[in-house]
Each structure stands twice: as structure tokens, then as C-alpha cells.
Image (tube, rainbow, N blue to C red):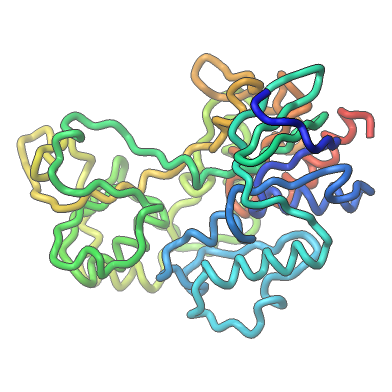
Length: 360
């Protein structure tokens, strides 16, 4: 162990985004005391999970949907907010009020650097001190693990390569030609904004699918079920968003009218001055903006998490939050609960099933 153990607890929840707060809520509802029987550790400096780091131009009216945390309505809490308010302000405020209302003690900022076994307990080393617990609910989400695919020539590119999480404002790209990679909701939102101030080239691996029908609860549950099926087999999860399709919003209709949605297939290599396709066509670029998603932020569990040959994790339990080969670890915000669609129910299932495993 690298730090002196200062705190012992029964269950440690790592992460205080939607999934982590949901799990903490359900632990408390089942009779455990926050700060004693279970602890919540969060790397972020303030309440709000990954929302506090989202780009300033992401406003409530353009967010796909903010799902309520259990026991407290988002809409009723932020009734004084207009739809044009920044999501990075409104949602963290909601999370902060939630923590206070339900008495959820969150230790922050504490980055969990490593978890390992010792005397049949999980030892949790953080940036400041150490903890030990009988069981873990890891709710670290994906924001800390952006995915950047490897392409020939990437190291030779003389421009900038940025990821979705690096985006701050469209104005930064004024006067630059931007190659925008990706077919998810974030890619579409950033393409819309950037194309209004400069020239863009939109590139996707597969032709994008636009959804005309509303994305209701049934559609959401179906999408979650598809991702859940993969993780139960130990396959690396797809994102929930990747199987939902893109909403045909007024912004998308306007982008079609402006000719912005002229999609190109994926290039085969990156050159010093841009990108190049297999047929020899080249496009000069000042910036390549990768909207290629995120992977589960699970490196802190490397010493205790059993992985399959392909890198996946066999998941079990009623909502696939339990690590099948180590049931004292639950992952929420992973696979089917990696979006707000599945995070709440997953938090409840993880709390219930982990307490049963530990005989509590």
C-alpha cells in the first residue's frame, strides 16, 4: 500500500455523476449511513459529474434529455432556468442540491489512482489518502477516457488534433478548415456550430442514420437492451447512443438546407497537411476534430478487474452491473448504464445486489 489507511467502510462508490449518485441514494434508502457504511469518492472539484466540463455552448435546449435522479425532479429543481442556460451550469447545480437534500457525503476532489486486494478487502489509493472497503461500485463513466483511433500518418500532421472533450467554442476555429470525424450527437452538434463560422469536411465510418420518430422511453430501453446483451457475453460495449440513431431536429434540417451534411467516408491516412482517401483524393485541414466517443474509465481497477481476452468484462446481475467473475465489484455507468437512460435503474440494482453479496 502507498498511503496510510485512514478510513474503513463497507462499500465505496467511486464517482459522483448520475450513476454514482443514484447508487449512493439507493444505498442510503436501504439503511446504510453515508460517510460511515458507504463512502462516495469523486475526482471532480465540484458536484456535477462530467457535466461541469461540457462546452459552454451546450445549452439545455440542445441537450438530448436530462434524466431525473431518483427522488428529485430536474425540471422542478431548475424551474427558474431558461432553456438557453448552459448545461454545464444547470446540471451541476441540480446535482449539488441533490447531494444536500439526501445527505450524501462526497469526498472531493479525490482521484482514485489504484485499487488492489489486501486481507480480503479492497484497498483504494487516492491522490490524498487511502480507504478500504468490502465492496465497490465504480461509477467513473467515460469522460476521462476519450477514444482516439490510430491512423497512418497521424504523428506527421502539422495541424491540431482535438477530441470532443477539448471543444470550448466554435469561434476558436474561425479561419481554419476543420475535418470533423464522427456520426454521433456530439459530432452533429459541433458540426452545426463550427460550420457557421468556417469551412468543414464531415467524415464518418458508416453512413449516419437519422431518426424521424420521437426517442421515447421504449426506444431508450430497447437501445439499452442491445448494449446489455453485449456485456453479458463479455464483449466490449457499444455506446447506447450508437444504436439509437440521430434525431432529425430543426438544427439538422437547417444543416441539410445549408449543405453542411455532405458526408464523406472515412479517410485512409493522415498527411502532414490534411487527410487522404484510398482513391488518392486529398483534403487540406488545419484541425481534425475527433468525435469518436469514449471508453470506460476503469484503469484504476486493473489489478482487481477480470477481463476477457478481447478486453471486455463478463457482466451479470439483473441489469448487468455485477462483474460476473468478481461479484463484489459493480460497474455503473459502464455498458448499458453509460448514459442517463440506464444509470438510475442500474444504481438501484447495484446497491441491492452488492448488499446481498456482502450479506448486508
